[in-house]
Image 1 (cartoon, one colour):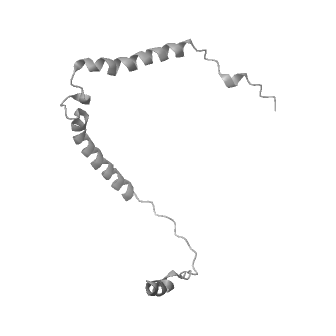
Image 2 (cartoon, helix red, strand yellow):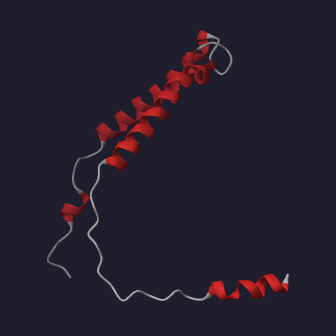
Image 3 (cartoon, one colour):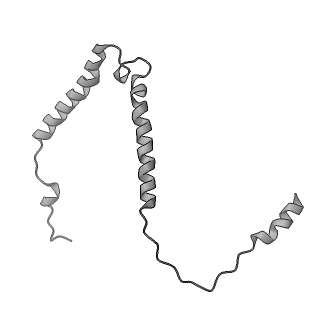
Length: 106
């Protein structure tokens, strides 16, 4: 084990720097964008094909719901909270809080 470590010691030396410090301007290419778009398209296609099977969760029904009565709490509870939130929002004053601060004070 020690011989391998000693033998690799010259590899740990810093490589000499080149005298030239000229940096070339980066080339703008649309090829990476096209590759990314192709990858996104391929993965979205695969997800679109698999989505109906994943949504049924083995029941063969949408969202895995096999009883129509289960749609009532699924849709009803968020609808009640939305209604309550909209009622609360309509009763609030629309005065800007930060408009009442005196800007002349330090």
